[in-house]
Length: 320
Image (tube, rainbow, N blue to C red; front, side, top):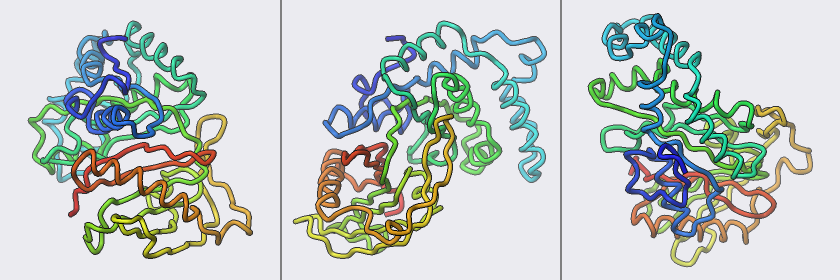
């Protein structure tokens, strides 16, 4: 394994500094026996290597002095932020990943024996006490071998989207080094997916957990594009306290070319409960195990394919 890449099995929660919040969490859960789809992390030093060791044309070299670019940004002017973002991202996107690193990434991808992977940015400042970078950086689902390196590069450059640039300024982190690790994980073509809060997020009741479930890929639930079912459980005995079934007319699915698209759900299925009582309890037990492992309330993303549950992310609930 390359010095720039680590398999989930070789990562723990102590590796946030090199694997970012997402990467460290996935490694930690893999080692705790939680059902996590297999994958690896392209560590933050690889981002450094790409930024500082990669030969660029002399013009690009001067243009990509990121710090001096950002120092010139007028944060009261969205055009100024957009322009800086465009210049930085264009140069990064036009720069090839160094061959030794690119070869290592492709080699690890082949080991996954997956047609598609999810490629996710994992900032090394993520979920720190200062700021939660979750949601500021980019994710590319249904990535295949052909688009793999491009999407890894895009995850790196998403540190410089207008939103991320402004976020860093707003959180007074402009002097701080934020790096990006990239998680590459076998894509689960989920029939049902959603989130779980191991403490009720509204009532803040520590004895209850809430599971939300929708048909298709989880992005639709996470981004609020569909209204999911919600199930409330008692954490002591996993009894179901409340079931709220939502009608769902369309779902997000992966396409063979590597994109996502919306698909209509057959009429007979639209008003059905997404998970059975037995499945709800099975999933709740996995989520309770994760909370117990981390010793604090968790916000968990899950997917279900061919009747099997997978955990794709877990992070502390920041709003309690």
